View (spheres, rainbow, N blue to C red):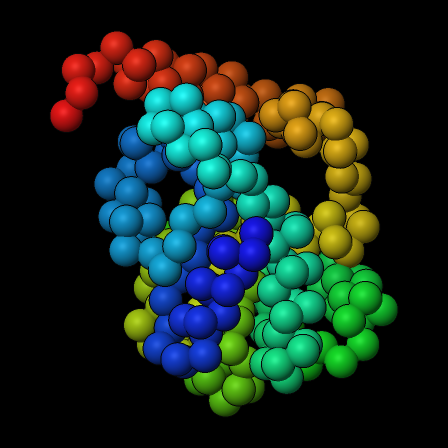
Length: 234
């Protein structure tokens, strides 16, 4: 977490834009099937391991014993705390108006000196959002150093990609983090997060919406991992 936060803030201080992907199994398997998503992940400022199965794969397949989870909501809180100490502004894009109100309230209770430069709940966007000159101007004029984007994967990644070179702050795609920090959705218990079972908790919360994602995504991840295990070294 410390390494990821410092790397992101170092880029934010340069005010040259860029994007950060908070990767889990769903994002990885989508990227395997979606060239545009894979390309933007390759050119990201950072791709952090939000999912425990990715951490295990890094440790076992690539020998990265130092790999740790960078939990999305935890990353938001860590970056906000550090931004508050530096006087760096933050901007929130995504979520519902109610979610954004509660999110800001909870963050300011935790970090009273946090500078919230702006918060926008956009209308429903297409799967691959176009460039929005108005929001780009608003973000740049706000003076924010970080933009947290909560549109869900891969919509938020496509939004960040098309805006990354035209806004000054670093954009971080944080998915469900807005709802979890706001308290509008329940967070999985710590033991389930540590055991890589957060997906099971979420499936129990929203089975109708998530069953297909996890059935396909988790199965593909297992297949990709097994294929990597038996692939000759390159």
